[in-house]
Length: 78
Image (cartoon, rainbow, N blue to C red; front, side, top):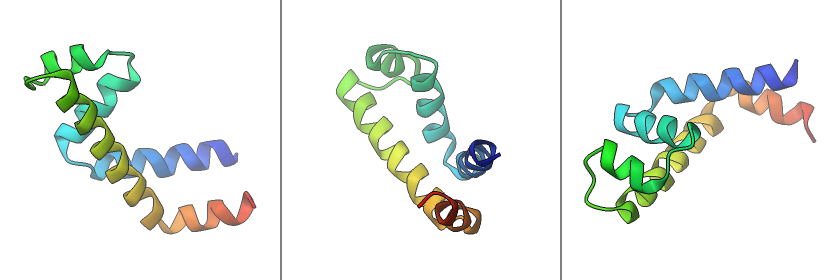
């Protein structure tokens, strides 16, 4: 049950992200290369795509950390 708890926390956090962050993470998780992500999101190059993915992931992590249920999740996983 803990895995589904974590998935729920992450998916809730994902919904709170800016749409462009959602897009870049979704494309990345589907296995798109940075080149493809840059192309689909009209970014100048793959470095920008890589940077945007990093920023998006960091934003997601921050939201996850603020989730009260995540604190509970951590208690179960010490």
